[in-house]
Amino acid sequence: MHDRNISALDKAFPESKFNARGDRIKITGPQEEVETALEVIKGMLDILDRKDAVEENDLKTLIALKSGESTARRPQIRDLGEPGDTIIHTHNGEAISAKTPGQKRIVTSSTKQDIVFAIGPAGTGKTYTSVALAVQALKDRKVRKIILARPAVEAGENLGFLPGDLKEKIDPYLRPLYDALEDMIDRDRLELYLAKNVIEIAPLAYMRGRTLNNAFVILDEAQNATNTQMKMFLTRIGFNSRAIITGDITQTDLPRRQQSGLISIQNILQDVEGIDFVYLGEEDVVRHKLVRDIINAYEKFENKKKK
Image (cartoon, rainbow, N blue to C red; front, side, top):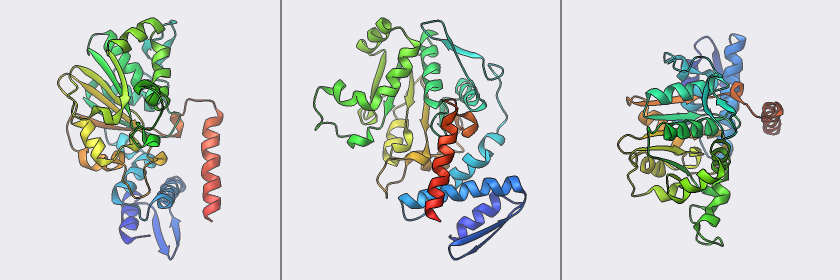
């Protein structure tokens, strides 16, 4: 482990001591801090499985995710009360609400900031909460359209070789966004919105060259956007527009040596006014109760293989 990484860990966990010898590292300190530091180190090992080194940005992101530093350093904005307050109702009348502290932070940050980054593991409701906010903004006429984008990494953002028209080519990659919309808008109205481009769902590559005014823009699975793509997307945002960028940096599908734009952007934009970073953790998982256990089991299995 590089000396700079040890120094970063020392700074992030001041009550603990880190002694590295060869490929072993010994940690001593308060139990809670040691456990958090261990989670960070496990994340570093996962990154090393995908590329040659853990960059400074990678480590800062892991520390923020595991220790909650990013949310602790900001005063919590209170708009909707406690988690559970309704964001919007589905077309069947069911209430969609912020169910966890992490989802609550997405909601409150989005009401105050023009651009919000929501970073956390699968199952924490990042995308669903973001889409609910976008649909509510459209219903309240705060924006004129919704634009949902995803990097189509599995197809290399080059969809020409796939059969069918554009919609048939990209639908498999964008299906989760359709699923969320279908919960919130009745089918006939949704089809009308899609036909008139009031709601637009497209691969990230199709945002190039555009200016997105009067829109609620969501970039989903942003861990699969490169640095160049991330810059391109963020510079598309125009007047009276809001954006939420969601992603899970532990599940990037980019080539081994390609840096995720979602990791880099945290250092680049951390001091820019009007932008906020919200970090979600395992405590925000809202899928089936076994999902958290499955995530933990996979982590234990991977760590056992490394040993």
